[in-house]
Image (cartoon, rainbow, N blue to C red; front, side, top):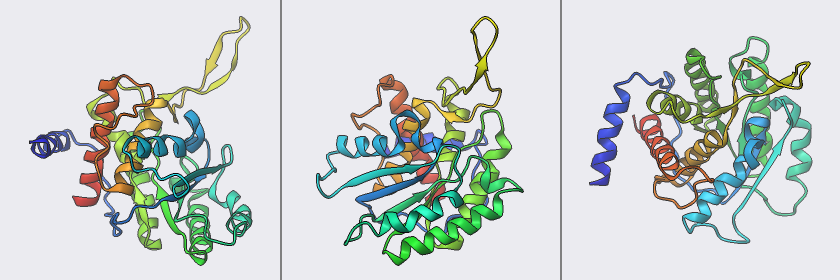
Length: 266
């Protein structure tokens, strides 16, 4: 009954014209990494870090094994992947045994589709993937989301990340598509938080017009998307809800699973 309800929801949601990747993923999620290193910037470290949110979902599912599972985060504020390259070899060589199963790569917000930084995204993810695989670590690309109210950006990012993942023969986790689906179907759930630009003469906060950083709900949705992709299971019903209203968290769990089905299974 549950699968039938989810299938009906998927058909209904697809009818609203949610963005999908024109470039189809060539790598399907089939394994469950236990030791994961996220490499990125503020998109990953906001709200106590994507690594903690995913690990909390795993723990609430009863799948976390102390001493075996390990999730960590390496970020540079406003950073781009090329800025991480110099720090990758020392990080991987600090142990006599392989520390990670997977290295998740998250580029600057519009880097993959920027004329200025697109080639840097391609070249740096190529180089990091080579460094990782020399240590037996698989690269995974973190498809980020569009800025709020910039619908065209969703499609562009989805295609850029998926094309590069295909080139690397690597998995891509479609977080950006989950954001788009949530925005279309549940616009009352705020996935973004404004950035403070400064203060006026009376001390009032002045905010940037571009909304791009994730709220707690946004980070939670991203975490649900990683859980679904890494475990090939729906996060729906997991007890960890990141202090969100239970109905909101449940909806985000459903959206992550629907995105998983749509992106990987078509």
